[in-house]
Amino acid sequence: MIRPLIMSFTLIAALPAILIADEVDQPGMPEATVEKESPWLITPTVSSDPKLGTTLGAVVGYIRRFDPESSPSLMTSFVTYSDTDSYVGGLFGDMYFDGDKHRVMTGYINGKIRNEYDDFLGTGASAKTEDNMETFFLRYLHQVKGDWYFGGQFISSDYVIGAEGFLDLILEQIGLTGFRSNGVGLVGEFDSRDNQRNPHSGNRFVAHNVAYREGLGGEESFDAYQINYSNYYAFGDGHVLATNVRGRWTHDAPKAGYSSLNMRGYTRGNYLAEHYSHLNLDARFHIYKRWGASLFGGVGCLYEKVSASDEGDSLYPMLGGGIFFILKPDAGIVLRLEDAKGEGDNSAYYLNLGHPF
Image 1 (cartoon, rainbow, N blue to C red):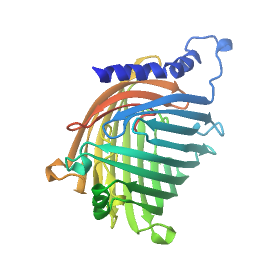
Image 2 (tube, one colour):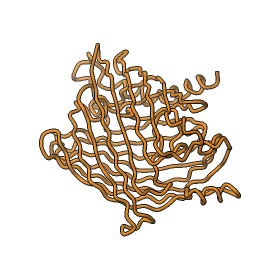
Image 3 (cartoon, one colour):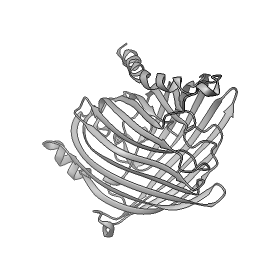
């Protein structure tokens, strides 16, 4: 009973951003009376899960098209605070230049997260930890031919996990006290989507690696490889079926560099493994004007995992649904309110910007 009430309150909190967006550029309005869409974006964010509790935040964004042939670029800043006295803030840029020939993605994140686990690393024990993190990343892609892009990336992360008493000794013994890592890698991408942030058709395939090295200032040398494929199929009156397949594999990684289960309904970082892959389906239905609804589901798989005591728990299913509103149609910026249910007690709801893929 409480969960639907909280989600209703979350939607009410987002109404100012929705109402302002809905007043601009209404279909059927005379051209002389249509206001120019504001390049600014201000919206709340809300999420809730068993580990972090309820998290409130805000996003301030600025949209700019650097040239007529390029996709709209988005620069944002955000801050979040949870009822576990955790906070995270950061900056993010997703930019397109020279007719989409050059693409730059960059970001900086800093925060302190106090985690409360009901089932710490699958042991069945409750625990509390305090994580201090700072991350910077930069990716550049250059158009090689048509929908093909090639480039490189740099990632720097400083992550420290702390706990009290006996739990701190356990974290140290299994190698989960955090670490400092710096890495570089190559990126290849194929992108035929009709819109970068709210696609109705096309495909996107990304393959990249990160070589973390002590010589770059990191504590250990290891490698990580990722692939990410999405397909978008339009049907009916504005409906879309989005499919996503993703995987991450590591080589010689310390436990702090392992892959995390990354699916809605599960707390990221609660389940770890050397390797991870998932399949997600997301059906997006056009309801009325800028309003839509979504139904989604998927399954994730961990390989050589260290986070659960039962090897039979390597598959993690997920189901959910929600509603969304298109805040900025030209830039494809969407505000989604959704509820996701994972295996067992894993569940979460979110009010976030953007589709998950």
